Amino acid sequence: MSTAPAATRPPLLLASTSTYRMQLLQRLRLPFAVHPPQVDETPLAGEAPRALALRLARDKALAAAASFGSPAWVIGSDQVCACEDSILGKPGGFDAALHQLRRLRGREAVFHTAVAVVDPQGTVQLREVPTRVRMRDLDDARLRAYLRAEQPYDCAGSAKSEGLGIALLESVSSEDPTALIGLPLIAVCSMLQAAGLDILDAADVG
Image (cartoon, helix red, strand yellow):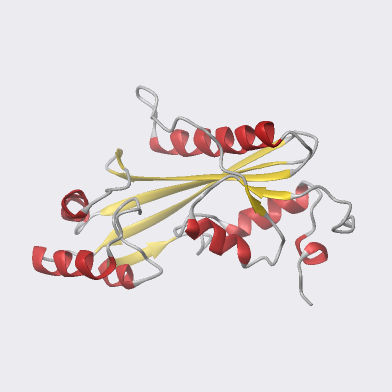
């Protein structure tokens, strides 16, 4: 499939202000703009973690596409961390992060990372890539030392696997190594290809 020249094709938008997702998308060497959506991220009553991630990814992509007002490819994504079916959000501070890590130690958490792609005609694709993470059974002193060193207060589950947080993990299982960081690039490439944007044709490789 041939992609139109950059000057004539619709833009690519990332419906997120997450620095992690921006850095991941930059790996594809595609020019893109950040177009943050206005979406209420409150879970619905009884909503399962996977369903929440899928709904929010879709809502973010559609909201950004609607507010942009012109044809575009739009990527929306959301990640929900669950331990024993309870949702663990972004801790926001030391005490909440320590509480999360205490709850997770020696246990398995599932990070449900969902991505939605809206094409210039408004067609929506939606996928979810789960990542299973088993945490080491570490004492409070080590957990506190980690939090003071990395301060991962904007990360669900309170651990940055791409940084020092890898020392907290016993194992990681996923079909996409980028999913845990926040944007499953293997799925994104496949979805953009299906939406008419060929990554290797469109990438800036000069």
